[in-house]
Image (cartoon, rainbow, N blue to C red; front, side):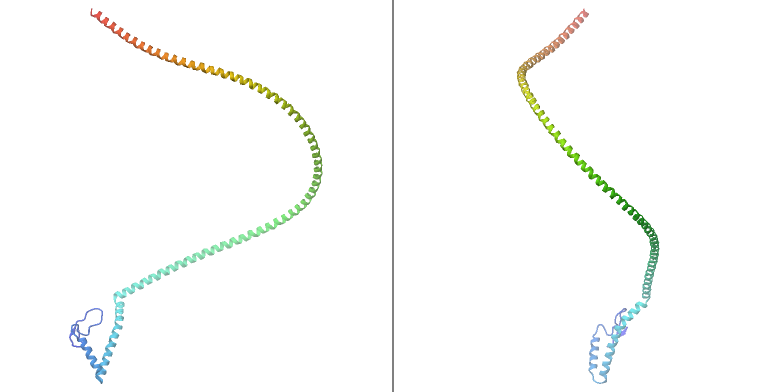
Amino acid sequence: MTPCKHCGTPIEQRPGRGRPRSYCAQGDCQAAAKRERELRRATPGLEGTLARAEEFYERMEKGMASVIEPLARVLAEELSPAGVEAKLSAMQAEAHTRVAIARTEREQAFEQVRLAREATEHARRERDDMARQMEEANAERDTALADAETAREQALAALREASATERRARNAEAEARHRAEQAEAARDAAVRELAERVEATERSAAEQVRAARDQAAELVAAAERRAEEAHAQAEELRRDSVQALAERDKTVMDLALAQARTADLRQQIEALRAESARLLERAVSAELRAGGAQGLQ
């Protein structure tokens, strides 16, 4: 409870945050106090100066209160058990985060060390491989030099052999030219002989063609005569075939009549068989009746 600054009436303050009340809530004490302060400030002399000083002090007090209140609220929040616990939790979380980061960095450092060791081992293996390859290259170089020397010697031998071969080729060319001349002479002789043979063959072939032509004419004449005879025979055969067809038609008609008569005879035979069967049944019945009558007598 605090008294009103104008009338002195006790004022009940609300708990919690916010500025405390200085005047009554129901009356116009605040407006009346404001009018009095204005009158006092307007009064000349010491009283007006004091009024203005009091008003300045009140404004300064209000400004300080507005500045100090957030600071007090923050201090209360941080210095309270909940604030301290929250601060500790935040610090612990930050510490855990830093520890996790440190562990991650340590693992990364270990991984980098492992990779560096592997790279070193790989470089060492590559160095050994390079040394082995250098040795192999030196051996291959020595082998290549030896092969080159051998190839040079072989080339010299090949040159010597090529010279000898060239001489032999020249001799062979001269001999071949001589043989070609002989072959050309033999060819000319063979051509002349072949021409003579062809001429003789043509004369013989002409004679054979004439003889074959005469023989063919005789064969054609004989073939024509045979064709005429064959035509006459064919005409006679045609007449015979016409007569044979007529006879065949007559025979077919006779056969049809015979078949019809045979069918009639078969029907008559079937009728006779049926009639004989009926007569036989009647005879058997009559005999049975006669036998029965004799038995009764």
